[in-house]
Image 1 (cartoon, rainbow, N blue to C red):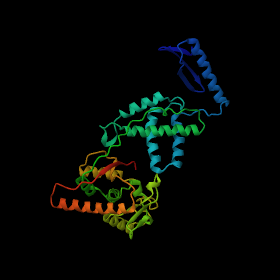
Image 2: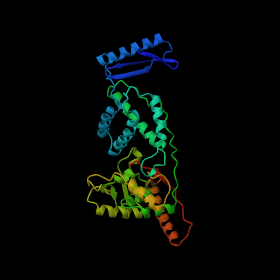
Image 3: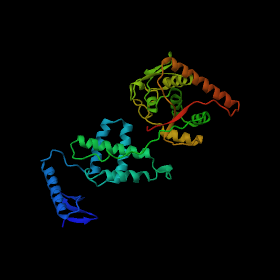
Length: 341
């Protein structure tokens, strides 16, 4: 008998071209369950025979290879690396499943199980964050979108899954912490952090900075790329930033200010390890996958000049007060901003 009772519903199970099909008929009546089984067999036969143009879906781990090959061609290296890491996690949960077998309920189970897992490495006692789970769900959703575009007969099981809320809170960094962090930072992290703090540039914007974008006479930096039109902007150098960039531009044998040590034709891709080490050496608390940066805005040129002058005066005031042994120092609104590089 290919149908059997399970709870209040009848289920059917049969083999089809080496694949075990075991599903609930959705009916509490045996006769109706037998009809549902027959229809399911017919649907599978029609699909394999080519009466339905959509292609039969592959197993999950097989499609992961196709998806990652496509991602490598379509995405930036860091984005592709993120999808690769997420797919490693997803395969632990969905390996052996056919793409059309994975349901919303299974995705919900993955979401709950994943957030209870412990981190690897030095943070073994810390559970996986909601942000990390969300990134894996985003990869899974993109994978199914790509599968649909490839003509596979699948529906996206992530579409109605609610992601974990990401608070977006910022942590205020004190002047003492800023100084301790910079003192503990190795190069090129120290110079990268200085640019971020004084200009509000994102990490990837600093990494991709080219000599041609620098105007030392006008003391400006032109950022030609970004996710939005506002991101493509001109920034004013503070005195410290001018010194850092002047030194970097003079010593770099690449058209990038921060070239990769392995390939001068490419910029550096990450300062994550150096950042984690600096946080530990400086004795700072907080999430180690973030880097200090000022909240960035895109004001008018005059306001940028005024802001740069204020930052220079602020940095000088901190140095003077700390040198004098004062515990009262000026404050400036600096934040911790997430970095995936």
